[in-house]
Image 1 (cartoon, rainbow, N blue to C red):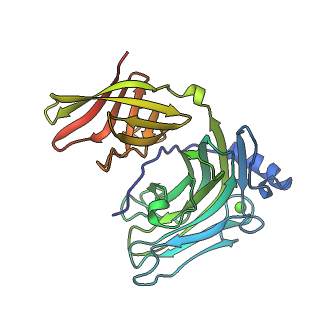
Image 2: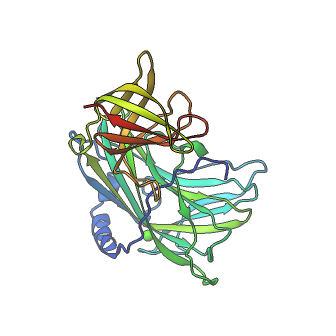
Length: 321
Ligand SMILES: [Ca+2]
């Protein structure tokens, strides 16, 4: 498991109501639109049951060589949860690294922030708690091509103790995505092989909800702040004054003569224990120091996820009134 793992919030709840709606929507061909392109950004949802092929989804994979391994993604009638067809993912993971998925591009409004919830039925024969593969599901701004572009979730197991054959499990994952000028969003669903064996999974009854987030609901963190650094004992070692400039969802943290970070304010959809604040600043590495985000506790207090110096505790930001 060398790849960076981005934990995401996962909720498992029945979506039988969705399935009823799904059949209705499919019959009107709503899923064929496959895109939203409105200004201002709007809430939208899409459903896929693969009753007429891939319904616009493309197949992709990475880390499938050394040695070359067998894999396939097909629409099949051998198993289904809704209707007659589902998507089958087959991965003979003999290189212990394969990642395969389906992906779909959506057109959305530029310079907007979305909360994307991807729910679906996942058919799996993986029982127990060991040797499970890992789920790939999420939304990104860039076309996912390599491991670093993928969003990994929890495991592929149905968590019954015995080998009971195929079990359909309900999956639901939420990601926040900041859309830049590209106006594109990619949604991916698949599996990451984390054990040297062959596995077959099925995906059906996909429901995607895309909800724009309002900047008015987000904290305003512009202004002057003091960063306090702490040693590993928790004693304050020194402080640094910085200025934060917030422009739309982009955050610049500036020192006296340098930019310490240019990051993105985002709603926090990380899994526990990383869900300790409603918002985070992401993509903020403080000149290569390695932190992946800053927790925005409120408009006057923030804390880094990792220390900004050796043998330290995380640094705390305090707003200067
Ligand atoms: Ca189906």
